[in-house]
Image 1 (cartoon, rainbow, N blue to C red):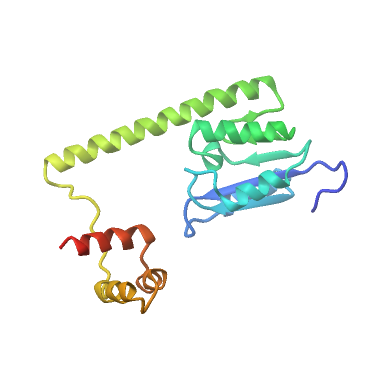
Image 2 (image 1 turned 90 degrees about the horizontal axis):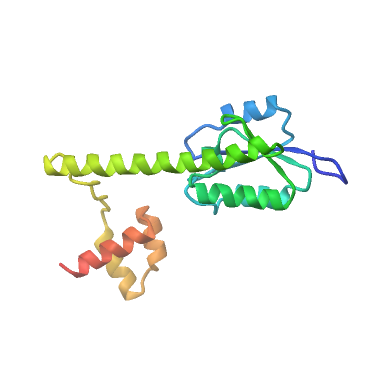
Length: 193
């Protein structure tokens, strides 16, 4: 259902972190709430540079209501979260997060919005701190060696071909299923040998 004239819409935003994760649970909840249009991203919430998020921000109009399952589905940092809600507010769009019972149409909802955003970021920082501490302890015990390096058979041959201009680095990366960062890191390591 597209927006026509003064018609106000309930719009949903769904996010999961990877292509493998399912969105059905969030979608069913939004449909049960009468949401008419849903935008779905399968991307990390650590950035606001998500295609469907951008489309949704452009799409919403004054008087619309944006509903999300939880703050963490919308944004991961308090700063990003508050900036996104501010952009919605500038367009006079109401924001609702079901899990946290936040509704920016009410003064209490706007207050809770700020509190929950700060608590969510604090919790994430604590998690990172505990993870770093755990890794340090494991390293001291010799149980943590870091992530195993990827094995890319044919890398050196394709690297030589790319240096000679027989193949582009981008083509070589695609053939190996290698990211740009990994390609150039391994190229530096190979040259240093």
